Length: 69
View 1 (cartoon, rainbow, N blue to C red):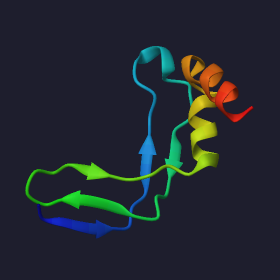
View 2: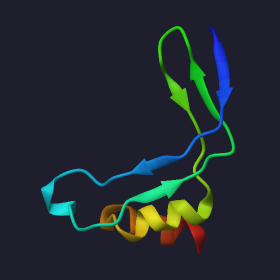
View 3: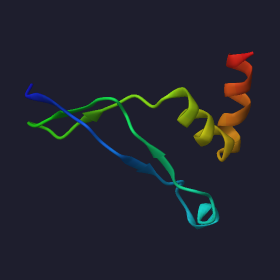
View 4: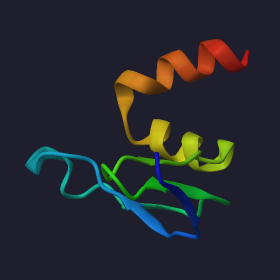
């Protein structure tokens, strides 16, 4: 594999028209790894950004509150 590191700014949008009013969550992963052969990318989302995502995604909020308590 031909993996290369990049810096990145990623805007995560919630899918569907029902989520049009939900805010975009901007994440700034410390490292974005991209396979230049196939295009697969990998990055980690900081815990504070994970909480923002969960806050606006009801099906995830319950699971996160259980695992952090």
